[in-house]
Image 1 (tube, rainbow, N blue to C red):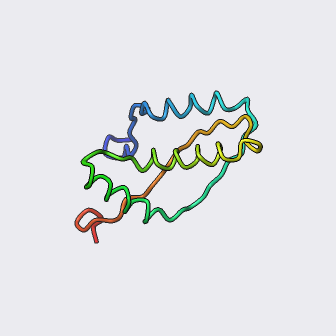
Image 2 (image 1 turned 90 degrees about the vertical axis):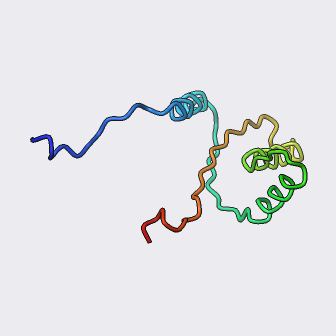
Image 3 (image 1 turned 90 degrees about the horizontal axis):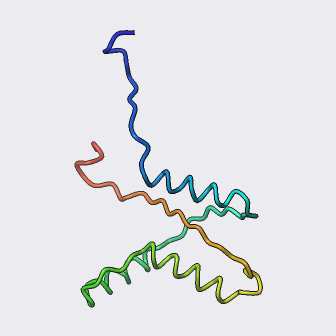
Length: 102
């Protein structure tokens, strides 16, 4: 195979992926319920932007989501007596003109 035919590359494993693997290894021994859900966060994002403008402080959407999950666990302790929450949030940025090629 010539150099021009070589179409793959090797890249270092990102630190965030190493952290994810560590969490998964620790969780392997626990009873887990996995959930995949889609939520409209438009109102929450609008409120966070408003708070940022009014207070000049940084508010995290991820932090807000984790706060909401923690409040639900607190409210229903009888159901979640030994709850441990691990959250991975993936999102897709809106397409911006000039970046998408369209």
